[in-house]
Structures are given as C-alpha cells and as structure tokens.
Length: 299
Image (cartoon, rainbow, N blue to C red; front, side, top):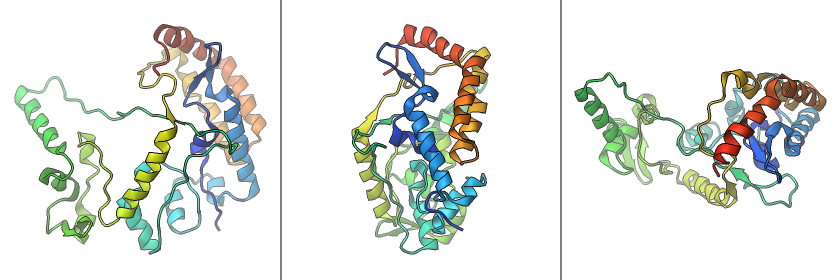
C-alpha cells in the first residue's frame, strides 16, 4: 500500500509560521506556541490529511521510523526531515532503488499562499566536546592535537583521510572528486569523528554534484526568509518544579494522535486546558518574569 504523504507534521511550522516555542504579542506578553492560532491551524490541516486517505497507512499505524525506506521504494512521494539526509549517502541509496532518483525540496511557502514565508533559525552550535579536568597536561595536549587534525580544512590531506579513508584502498580520484570503493563504502565511518570536532562545513557530495547544487539552491532561497526566534541561542534551565509542564508530554502525545487522525482536534484543546491548569500557565509566567523581563528576547 502507498500514499502520497509520509509523516510531515513535524515540519508544518515552516508553512503555518508558528513559533519555535514562544512568540511575543504586541503588548510584550509571551505566548506559548500551543496557544497560537497558527498552531491549531497546522494541526487541523494534518488531521484532515490523515482522514483524507493521502497519508501512508504505516504512518497511521504509528510507524514513522521507516519513512526513508518508503520514500526510496516510491511508496511515499512527499516526506519531511532535516537537511542531514540530503547528501551523497542518500543519493547512493536512492539511485540503487531507482536510477532516476533525485531528491528535491519545496521552496519555502506559506499556508495561505499570499504571506511571505518565515523560517526560524536554530542555534548554530548543537554539539560540544569536553575534556575531563582530571586529565594530565600531556593527555590534554594529545587530545588537542587529535582535534586539530580532525579540524583540518576541506581539501587538505587530513580532511581526505578523516572523511574518505586511504586513497587507493577506500577511495579513488574521480571526475567529481573522491569516489568510494566497495571497501570504503563498507569500512569508512566518516560521521563518527565530527563528534569530537570538524572543519567548517562545506557542501560536497562526490559523484553527485547535482545534490550539492540542489541543496545550495534551496539554502540560498530559504536564507531570504529566516528570522531569530524568541530566546534565540539563550541557554535556559527551567526550574525542576516546571520541568513536567515544560516537557508537556501528555500534550505532545495528544498532538501525535490528532495529527494521525486517531483523536479529534478538540482533544488537543482539552489537553491544552489540562496543561495550563497543571503548570503550563505558571511555566509561561516564569519565562515572562525571570527570562523575558530580565534578559530580553535574545533576538
């Protein structure tokens, strides 16, 4: 069985323009995304999609983990995900299933078809490496030398070794740059090392230059519509007494059920009422008084 759409709900914020977490109204008051009109509009659209028969039945059954496999097999034509999948590895897997495979992405657009699209930025740094303070100076220096090697710039011999392995064994020079051998495809795990450190990111997909062109073109278009969200890059630790309300797991579970057509949209509204009474309002008030009023929006 198939359906045009895979699970796309998690990325509807790009179309319906609801906040990453908070927005600030004209009176300077915080509004949680759950209480934005755009949020329930997006959820209502997702619910209608699920009920229409256009959502893949596996998604309705709770299987959102095999979306990539369904996409490669042509059983789902429209999916959602981050840019991390739009690369050489994706092209290799896709063309193995269909020689004409080419991943594409919609240019940013708005739900009403007239408003300018808006995409909120996410923090530039998401992973950090830490060295144990009890290490001996010689050990710290050794770790820093390793990090320095791994951070060698794109095009250097070190960068080639870290990302592609040994020339002649794991890769050979091709018209479009390093071309992995069977051994390279099997043995090289380039994505392991960047968790310590890496060079500045460069879009480069050996043997698949069109992937690089397509992704860069999308990024150039998307960059026209970005903005800094409320509390951008601010590292905020919520007091333990508000942790449950901040996670809002019961609300998130209800959202998933509504988006998959299991529960009506009214179930979300009921869940929000319970969330607000159970600590949601106090959570927002804390963000207002202890973060926004004291430190600003971070924008």
